[in-house]
Length: 316
Ligand code: CP
Image 1 (cartoon, rainbow, N blue to C red):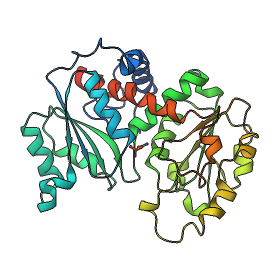
Image 2: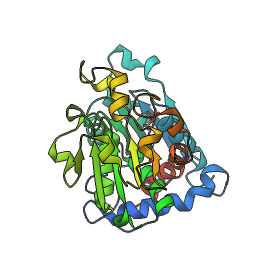
Image 3: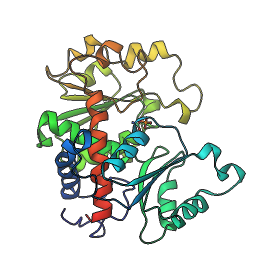
């Protein structure tokens, strides 16, 4: 893997995709693609990181990210510690950093951390020992870098490596979405030809996040001719009351229905990071339809997470 000129020559942590070069992103995607056979069936990498330990430290709920990190580490031969916040001494007031340092003292090499607060994972990384690696599994609305990578891998597998030919729409609650921020960093860095965003004005972030994007509020206009539509759920756990008057009205105006999808490019991809709220941001038939790659995205989570762990442990 070639060094990233925008950061240290070696990736110590993966906290965000912002600032990573196209070469680094491409090398991570290449590494993930090469690991694909071993992610789902093979055993060739079962001894690659034997003796190393990965700990999942999730202060927020997860199905996909946590499970696929567990499996990814197992495929690489690592010991896996699934730390249970709910029954831990964090409930007695122990801080997140003291928790991390306690587990570090037990020999954990890689921490995969999800937290509700923006910047929380970077703060933990700053307090970690020099040889410890942290991977951001989602912090507040800031970043979800491995989701961004698996989305790019899915796009690249289906549409080719030349992102300049693509028109990609991200629609829904971008304001509260860490996935949107990581996808936007990756799409811009990889040279996506056109990036569209669409949602109600009160669910879109500021111009600093949307730089270089075409902004739409009319979903029918936004979806016309796109090569891929990345649908986002309403992040009600991060949302103040009243931003969405009714879920029925939201689906009417911003739900991806078969009729709307018919206006996208004929072979357009339907993407969603999950969890989906069927009948809110996406019609159930579209989610399960032939253009949906939602489960392919999930499947790509394994090789992408294997590639990231490998890059941190072996060297980027
Ligand atoms: N996409 C994603 O982060 O899903 P989980 O919350 O289930 O991990």
